[in-house]
Every structure is written in structure tokens, then in C-alpha cells.
Length: 345
Ligand code: SF4
Image 1 (cartoon, protein in one colour):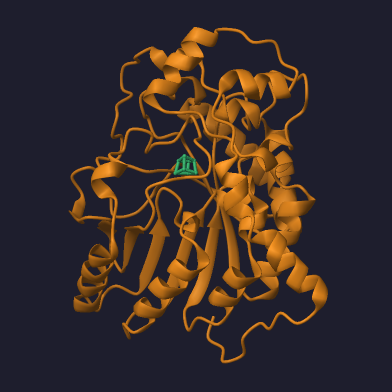
Image 2 (cartoon, helix red, strand yellow):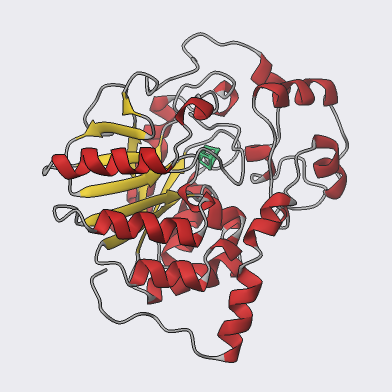
């Protein structure tokens, strides 16, 4: 957003809020990493413990407390729990499901940079997330090899500066909001010096699992940037939007940040018409436009989440009949080597 007016935090309430919100990284360090602890906390009987623990060796479990607080106690089928709880089925191999479904390993030009779409580049600013979603298409991505430092930042920005067709920086990861506000501010300020860059897009799930991540400082940084700022949230179920997240999103909206959502269509989590209608309506109430509904990227270990494309099309047609057009996300799939997402129709 282009503005000269910083969003000034003045009242005592706001100052207290700033202090409270600074604790997001403490919440993150206290995130639950142990299957038994998670299930005990939710009063859910512990089953298949060995298999679940084995699945964690391949892709660790990580769930922050604010996300656990949104789960229903005693409900082993809770749609939020199923997104993060390791399953025995992750250990099975399935035909057509591979470690790098989008062939990203070979599309990197240089560390932390993926340039596969015209006019925009993807910058992997952070190699970590605040939650490990079991369906993640990057669950096998070699983040360690792609960890970037200050020199890499400069090289990424040098690359962008040389290509005037690039108008948009997409910060992804991992989750770019894993960087602290000072680091983000520094990166954004450096990027602002490149005249052909117009937009900054941040893809994040972090506020969904730790709403305290939307600090006043972060809101100020985005509000005062010369870029048009877009935040693409990753919310899969209406239960993920509680009062805390709703309030955090309100601040971003008040600061002029465009809010969009992309969800993944997931078996037993959000694969009914009612689930999707509730999600779209709740998003809109929170000032977020439903943008994309992704078919699952066929990553190994996540096959139990997949939905047949024909079933997804039937569901999407029902949404079109039930909702206003602006509440219906585009049904898409990502395909390796394609210059944009592939609409499913
Ligand atoms: S937040 Fe996004 S990148 Fe991180 S584990 Fe979840 S789906 Fe993957």
C-alpha cells in the first residue's frame, strides 16, 4: 500500500497489546511435538503410537497451542486435528505419489529463489513453519540446502533488479512470517529500492495457528510500504477462524492489506459442500476472499487426503449453485513446468 502515513500505535491498550503480541515466538517454542502429549491434552485415546512416531521421523509433528485450543476435546475426527496428527498410512507408498510432486528441486535458479511464473518470483525467505501440515507438498523439500543468509538475500534482489519483467515478489517458505518483524522490514525496505517491483505477496499459515503473529509492528511495516501488499492465508476449515484470528485479520484489513485465502481440498476435513460453504462465508465475514481451492499435490505420505478430481468437480459445481460467485474459490491444480496454476473444469 502506498502511503506516507504510518499506522501509529498510540493508546495504552495498544502498547499492552504490542507486548502481548511479541510473545508469538514464545508460543512457537512451546509448540507440541509429541503425539502422546497432543492426544492426552485432547482426551483422545492413544492408538497406533509406534506408527505415528515412525511417521514423525520422516516429517516431525509440530502444533502450536492456539491451534490446539480450536480443536474439540474427545473428537478423534476433529478436522483441525486430522491436519496435523501423523497417521500410520503415511508410511505406505502409493503409486503416483512422489517426494517432489512439483519438481521444485530442479527449478531453483539460486538458493531461495524459484522463478517459474512470468512477472513474479517466489522467494523462500524462511525454511521453517510454525505447524507441520501432514498434506504439505514440501514435506520432503530439502529446506536445509535452501536455507538462505544475508548474502543470498542480496543475490536474490540482484537477480530481481536485473529483470524488469518482475513486478511481484511472492514470499513463501516454509512460512515467511517465521522471520521476525525487523528482518522482514529490512528485506522489504531493500526490495522497495527496485523500481519495477510493485507488489508484495506473503503466503502464510502462521497467523492461523498463532494469531499473535500479527503484531502491530508487522501491520505498520506492511501499511507503510510503498508496495501493494497482499496476504494469502491458508485456512482450510471454518473452525480455524476463531475470535483471535478474526481480530488479527481486522487489523490487517484496517491497514489496507488485501486478504485472500487458498485452501487445499482434503478428504474427511473439508470435502463436503457444507464444509466449503461454511468456510467461504466465514472467510468473507473476516474480510478474506476465497481465492483458490487446490487439489492435493500428490506428495508421498499424503495420499489418504486425496480426493478424486471428478468428485472435486461435482463439489465445486454445487458451490457455484449455492453461493455468490465471489464466494466460490477457483478449483485448481499445480502442475510441474506449467506457467500458472491449472484450472480444473
Ligand atoms: S504451513 Fe504451508 S508450507 Fe508449512 S507445513 Fe503447512 S502447508 Fe507446508
